[in-house]
Amino acid sequence: MLEKKTHLNLLYDFYHSLLTDKQRQYMELYYYDDLSLGEIAEEFQVSRQAVYEHLKRAEELLHKYESQLQLVAKYEQRQQLLKRMGAILEESSPDLEELKRLVSALKNVD
Amino acid sequence: MLEKKTHLNLLYDFYHSLLTDKQRQYMELYYYDDLSLGEIAEEFQVSRQAVYEHLKRAEELLHKYESQLQLVAKYEQRQQLLKRMGAILEESSPDLEELKRLVSALKNVD
Image (cartoon, rainbow over all chains, first blue to last red; front, side, top):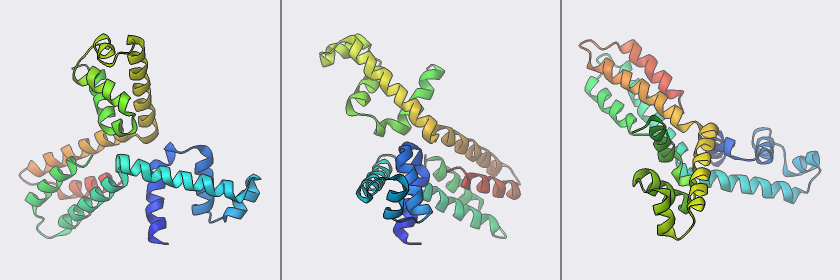
């Protein structure tokens, strides 16, 4: 899967509840079910251009929400800290002071 | 501070970026600076009713966003898990297995 598509998937995971039903429907058919614009247009009896405009608007909204809320960025930041904690806990003598620092750091990533 | 106000503060912290400038302005004056509806109305040369409507709409939006995104609920869930981790790390012989379980649990709270 392309990097761009992966990032868009994450944006969709976090913000799809803020989209309209139609935007969600088209995005799922286009990105998850891999239908073409033409196939979606045919299924909904609308023009290919109309489908394209809905998808474009939906993607713009996802990027706008991320610029406002930063949920994906914070999620990735937390996952990175947690991965590090998991690795420390697997060591034979886990560094408890570092774990404490990581817990503090995580408390600050809302 | 009242419980309701505290929860509203949290909602505001998480979602204020999705409000309009005017909604943010009125909310900050009313809740943070503790101005009355009348005082805000006077400052902006609008009716008391107009201020009330903006505040009401803003609060409705904050609740709507929380019902859609659950950011405050997830935040509180994470803080609770982290508090527990912090407490375990303060023990003389921290329970590493429980810490591992908590790290896994935290990874699932997006």
